[in-house]
Image 1 (cartoon, rainbow, N blue to C red):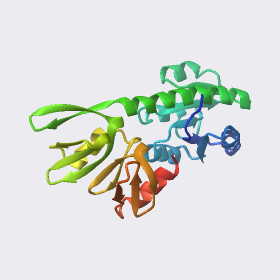
Image 2 (tube, helix red, strand yellow):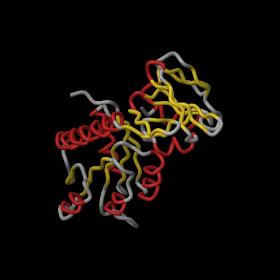
Image 3 (cartoon, helix red, strand yellow):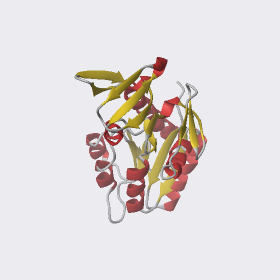
Amino acid sequence: MEFSPIRGIAIDDEPLAVDIIDNFCRRNGSITLTTFTDPEEGLRAIKTQKPDIVFLDIEMENISGLDIAAQLPPDTCFIFTTAYLNYALDGFNLDAVDYLHKPFSFDRFQTAVSRAMRRIEGNRHRGLTESIIVKQEYNNVSIQLNTILYIEAMEGYSKIYKENDNTIITRMVLKNMASVLPGDNFLRVHRSFIVAVNKIKSFTKQEINLTNGVTLPVGRQYSDEIMNFLMKK
């Protein structure tokens, strides 16, 4: 089974421990990893970057990995990496993908990552096949997310451009549209546009080209965030 590249964060207050995870991720080849030895800094990064997977030590200074796990964004897969066996039940209750007991081998690491990747791909697939309900005139219309190309702001409305040249105009402003769309699948690129990430063919800091041939501008205030997000995809 093939997996798409995924973004990860590792948090452990022991530098050697994060170095081992980083080395294993490089050997795996599917994970772009950022490491943190400061748990508070790592937690802030998780909340802003929303990685696909988190490797998390449990017993750290000032904060427990259990507390961090409880604050993770929805659908974040996480794997506990700890020298202590007595937290296995806590890991299960928090829905950890796996529980790696230090020192763990690369083969054991691979087993845990494979489990995580299956869950990540399932989350991505579910996000692309879900629907949203919008109001069009006096009717409620269901739109499958994987049919949306991009959304344009109009005066008090939003215009949803779908595949096969279909469009829907809804009385929902773009800001509210952004709040109901999954953040991993849709990206605000301009004050007037939201695009479906999987419909992007190419991009620069100035414009985005979609798979249907449409080119949209990138707003200056969004360009750095967009580049950081898409370069990690």
